[in-house]
Length: 253
Image (cartoon, rainbow, N blue to C red; front, side, top):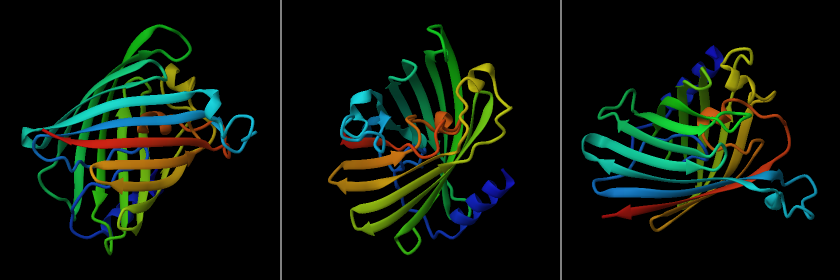
């Protein structure tokens, strides 16, 4: 964990002055929504592996999907209101975010808090989860290279979650993305966490395409989860890759 923190600080520190937003595959990123703006997001991670019987399973797409639909809206005082639904766990979520009005070492920082209602792992009983996260991101170095760090805690899993992401701009509207979630002490956590903790760290990589008011992300990763809290629980496999995508649409009112 100390090594991860050192790398995270180093990555963020090499950035310049801030101007945002660089979306990530699964990580939270400091918001760039302006007054009277909102953003609609659709996310999918397919359960099947693209590198396992790709023809018969159509690259894993006919094995079902973990889907998410969400919306966030800018509020006064640099606040945001968020709501969403994720099919895995039949999870409903309400949240709020606050973009810090100042920079720390030229790094933009945002705090996120959410309340979720979902199925308890391994049963149909409903339970709740409170997630608290901090995301930090630097301005792209040479207008090309940006890093994102997430750190948070979920009351349901009783575990700290960490994630590190990189965004490399190839062209004006095309970027390569990568994310890594270290698997912390697997003996720690609640009974619900123990039922979900994998044996390998989670990683993903992909490409981001920007168009007018739209953002498309296509990715491959060794997990089918969508949120930092779940991704930080690790994966049961090391090399099976799951295809996913995110479509974001910014709205002005």
